[in-house]
Amino acid sequence: MDRKSIHEMQAEVDTYIGQFKEGYFSPLAMVARLTEELGELAREVNHQFGEKPKKDTEKEKAIEEELGDLLFVVICLANSLQIDLQEAHDMVMNKFQTRDKDRWTKKEL
Image (cartoon, rainbow, N blue to C red; front, side):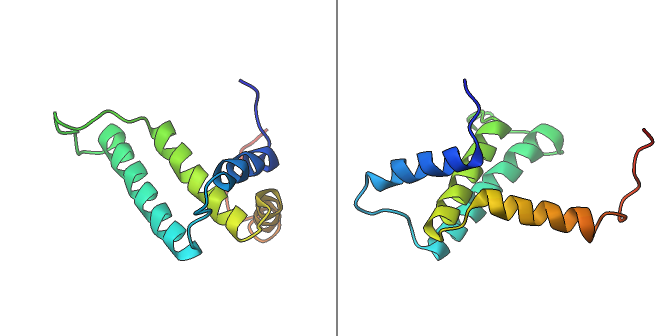
């Protein structure tokens, strides 16, 4: 499978959502969905790495599937607000590389 850029992912999601009359949910509804998806991710991580085993009746879900669900909703929210996620990423990385550049102990090379 070919790797997609963030711009390509945003365009793909926009094309998918654009085929429906309802379009994007409101930003507030999408934040609620993000919370729901994050909870599902947390549950899977807890099952795999925490002290809470799955019930016998619970369906097996992969952490990568839950991350994918979370990413889809993040892209939907960004698209609905006309936010370029590449630009947002670049802004955050610049912040980490400047403001937080000496915050953590660097590895010896």
